[in-house]
Image (tube, rainbow over all chains, first blue to last red; front, side, top):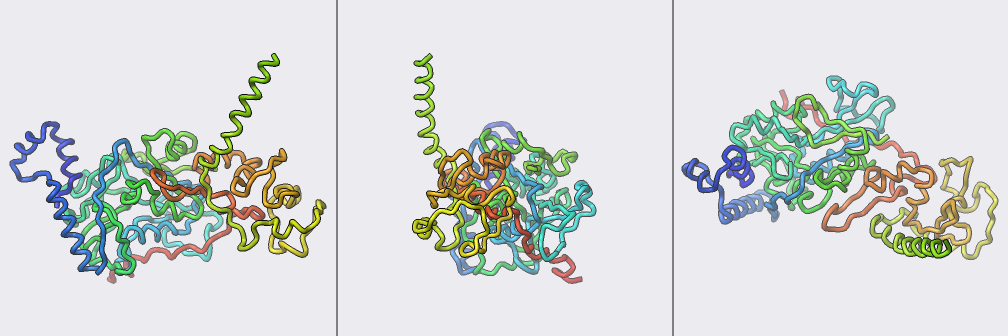
Length: 287
Length: 166
């Protein structure tokens, strides 16, 4: 299924002409889906999930709200590396649990004083308790780049940036070539090498078409800032679970938001800024 | 001049009254984490005499170990001596337990500033179009022993070679 967003992006990006003009140019090879066709696709997918999991899944297609551009803040002086966010994310976003175990957040451990030495980062650390003396922790997930290399390399336009800044994947359009994974400098994307293993009892049934709906074998997936939640005005799951209040979230276009406050008042940096990816994920130091 | 003074005092009264009401709206805080059955404090303290001498408590509250500038202070510097269900600020103002962030903010001014902006601490629920809850300082920091305690981390990810086999 060619999604609504992909087409919208296409028509706006490369051809700034009327709808008729676009249709003429494309000669019906690609055309925008009607509301009825979208409904039929959602219905088909809901029926498929019902057969697969014996549970009623509600797939939302809620579009991005005008005037929103989501941004994320992560306080490196507070993170203790407890990985609560990793598992809250897995639960909320219906990732495969084991074989394959897919996670959208990777918490890396760095020696204090060598924060830029990412080559020596460790993400399999497993001490009795955290934080460990002499180390600091840096969770890394999709940075929702303004200039996303993953989108540029996709040969089938199965991934794109939504108007609210979230880079999404149409799982039914993805062909599994994994070019996007190779292009991403943050290891922000993971791949379903086998049929995902998601027990029906653990399925989160409140899903979004572009977000946490169950995936299938041979598709790429990634963090969407919990698009299904944030478009309803709720904080992402990782923000809510964090026991140290490390994670901050808000609308970059709202001058009174928490994210704007921290960008304006704290020492912030964006990971691998020199790649010109323009992430909307701000690491900061509150102390 | 007198008229001016009067005017200023009227102004300040006019502003200070709704200010406290507005504060309740601005900070929809989580319930304070009382030990089960301990609140209201007056349930026990109403019948007890008042002893303002700094001392180690031997009969009650023995699980509380004060590790929070304990040399400089003790219970009644924060807890109200005569109105046990309230807290007290340094200037003598009586406040509710749900406003305890003001008490903490007296010393931790820069943290209080960040907390009000939503940068220190944690907010959950809806940031727009629904109910939002702000965690109080004491929801994460034990006020008597505020240092954040180490946690057991969740398990590390499975290594790829173990996931798929070689």
